[in-house]
Image 1 (tube, one colour):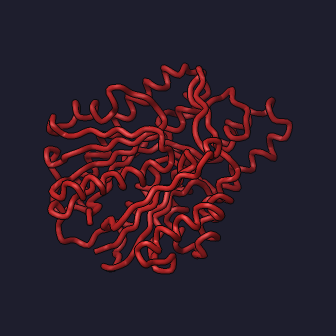
Image 2 (cartoon, rainbow, N blue to C red):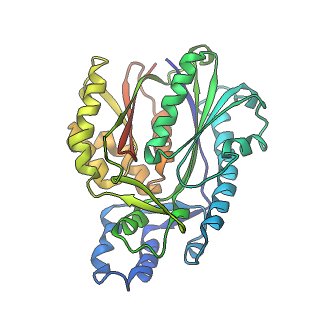
Length: 357
């Protein structure tokens, strides 16, 4: 059972209050929507208090070409990816001693908000002293599900190589995909919800982990809903990435995700009532409420996810790592089960069964 050893979270340079973002969006969309004040209630209804961005708010008021925004993506992914890695490998609470860079066998890089070839983890390896033989596995396009999927792929790697320690880096700069000329409701909702974040997780095989009580990965499962490409994703045009974000996502959690999770847990002779810790990607307030309704759980189990959403917004794939870090700082008894869940384009779900031991 591979073990999650540590999590590191990079600090974004600009934190903006939600009310300030709302004022800016009102100015921008006032001529596009006759009922802009009514539509802007989404900023209040989502109950996000602040979000973190890689650029000051004034930067987004100017017009930027796709190539210019992508250059910022590459520069930021390298800078904050290095910061998240350092914090992960040197975490004073999670680790009895720092992990050396040359102990890392492989790096999984997760992102959906920018493009780079060579990919970002190769560029990071030119900054930090990793072994030149470190394996590189960049994964693009999984959106909000990417963080959980990255841990699942790291789990499988460590099953095959039990002496290995691997890193999973999730780097998302959703703000750089903002389209000021996109007057769709999807863009308006996305503008109220998404933010920037970079996080790193270290996963170790059985022979590379120590005896501390930590979350161990018991099993994983992916699920894809057929013919659901229009639920969530990007519409890629000359100007860049245009968000696709369906209002049906909460209802899909109740109708489609619930039986997927039940089936996954039943394979391991468990039910939702056996899950003590719900490590959920907080896609939004309505998504969290749909989790509670679908699985019959109270707000205490979704409280960590909701607090992360309130403070940071939806950082796409990186968000679930911030939630995970909060759980790892708690004193959780050995034997407790946890469930990591994240949803993404496809429409898809990634599920990870955890047990603290």
